[in-house]
Amino acid sequence: MKYAALLYPHQNIRYRESLLKITQEELRMTLQAAGCGSELEARYTGNAPFLIFETEELLRDWQRKLLERVAGIYVLFQMEEGGLQPMEPLAVAYLKEDFPALLKYKGKTNEMFTDAMMTMALASSDFSRVADSQLVVCDPMGGKGTTAMLALCHGYHGISVEISKSDHKEATDYVSRYLEFHKLKHKRTEAALTLKGQLGGREVKFVLADTQEHFKEGDTRTLRFIQADTQHLGSLLKPESVHLMITDLPYGVQKGTSGKDRGILQTVRESAVGWTSVLKKGGVLAVSFNANVTHRKDLAAIFEECGLTALQTANLRHWVETAIDRDILLVKKTAER
Image 1: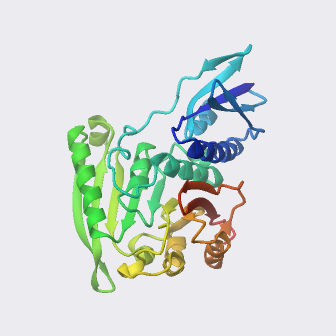
Image 2: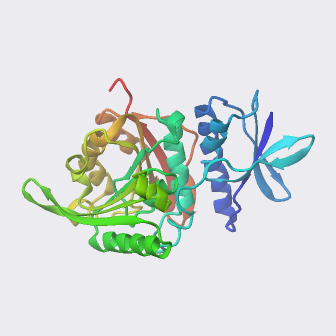
Image 3: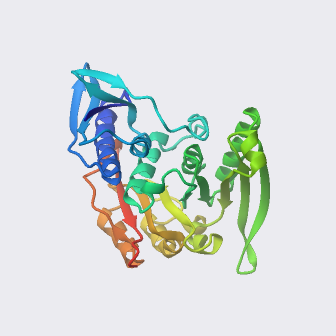
């Protein structure tokens, strides 16, 4: 059976080419996770970008739901007698897609790109076959919480760890406003965090549900915003409590742990052991970085020293803007480690 995936359009032609490259690898990994690996053909029809693939049998429902998580796909078609038959989506978003998109700020990573990293991490983890379950997704350098909010849209539990008090406040204030505006039943709690007997930050936790009925039944999701230094993550979260970790490293020499200025590699080096400790066996960390500043082999070496395994992918390095070529590294905590 032949299928055609129509990709999201993008006004910037250079980024459009990057989107095609990223989505092609995202779809390839997802097809492999779905047990129907296939060669992909990139094709433009009427200036619209498509990825064409073929399977031996009709896609099953669970396979279609997995493919619907591919962030770069706008519409999935079944090809029949030279025509395209659009396939109705099977998966239902837990929250509306505007949830992670409405909060705008300078330097924000495009939420579609973050979602693509999450899909790649899921597809290469041991949890792709249970993608509908309540997985836990953590961003150890969370900024204003885009990753955690995206996780919630997929019905997952989200955790965002950020050292900046102002970013932490802006993110949690936004979530409160959003939930109240949409009349979503929730409970917000705040607590101080103690590390080694001293104040180590604060946590704002939201317990919520997509409907009032689910909230009453206790069928809820948790969104945690932790204002703390990421190098303490191993003390802030339970060991092996996170299925997927997604983060976008600062693109230059910016603030590191404890607010000090230093190279980003030093920050990662100080934090990698803690990040590894909270990741479940079979879990995957997806990290994006500016390849003009941070070298892939150096970043991979840090995680491999902690027992993680760097995964092979297609070349995902792509242009973002002047002086920024972004790349993605996937590392996995294998069962043998």
